[in-house]
Image (cartoon, rainbow, N blue to C red; front, top):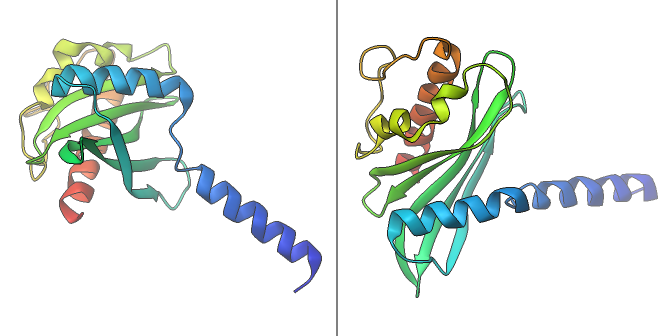
Length: 166
């Protein structure tokens, strides 16, 4: 194997391994949301799976949340598609795989930001991960945020399917 091929393989492997890390700018927000959800500060979380869509635009990572080696639940970091930009958010599930919270970590667009409100995001809570949300029927559409609300709904549905397969 040529030296160039070895260098490229090491670089690609290194990039793949670092793609599992949680961004430091999100870590504090995630810890706070986990503490609010589980009423305890989780000691650890471990990566269960990392999935990148074939177009490389959207990635999803699932973690098992533990405290004193006792599983508390799961969380997922994923992305939704807005009109012009993607946005990053987490879904927190309890140990029975019911949605407990959704938090937008970063919303990049100037349009559709209304989906970031806790009151709107609450409509997804307490449903089992087996549930597939019907946009415009079960999910309230927000005027001015139609594309973002559809993008979030689709991303939650995809995450639910993935979690059920774990």
